[in-house]
Amino acid sequence: MSFQDGNEQSSSTSSTPKSTQNTILSNLLASATASIVSRLATHPLDTAKARLQYVSKKRLASPYRGTFDAIMKTYAKEGINALYRGFGIILVGGTPGTMLYLCSYDVFKDRTSSVFNDHSSFVAHFFGGMFAETVACMIYVPVDVIKERLQVQSLMQRKSLLYKGSYDAVQQIMKSEGVSGLYRAYIPTLLSFGPYSAFY
Image 1: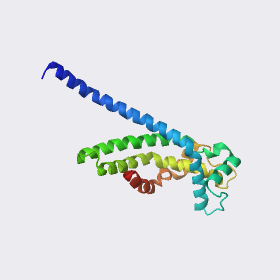
Image 2: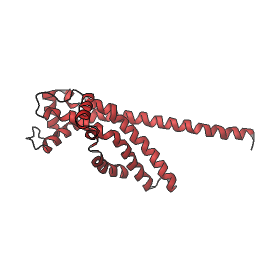
Image 3: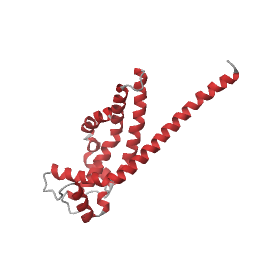
Image 4: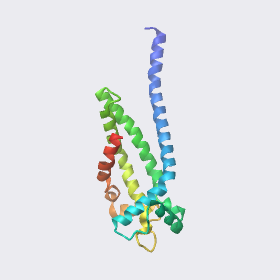
């Protein structure tokens, strides 16, 4: 083997980690952007869903006739801010959660693919999605708990809002319920979304 061939092999080998790093960075940025843009458009719908579920769970007389009515009445009574309560915690936690999911999915899928020596294997995609959801739920679950409490707090029949914002909600939940208050729904969420992510 010539000296030039050796240099070419060395150059190819050394460029691989850099290429991988660029791919990961691109995935991270794309994931973050997609998450923020989609959430801006859909957060009012998510707020309406949370409120409809809350009045149903508590068996309260619903002030809403449906999703669109919930959005319109929330806006008319409480303003645009009410439709975007919990958006801050989504930016702080939800976006990194999405980034973590997509990146860990690639990692777990590639590791599983190497075991079965088949990158198109159903098993690789299945376990990649399942493991990625397991990791991402460490962020998703507490973010959802805080977000939903902020979204429905005006329906709690209190004289004033219980939480001033996302950070205050975290402090109060940790003080009154501990870490378990943030992760109480971890197993149900994983059992629900884990299989979905695995097949998706």
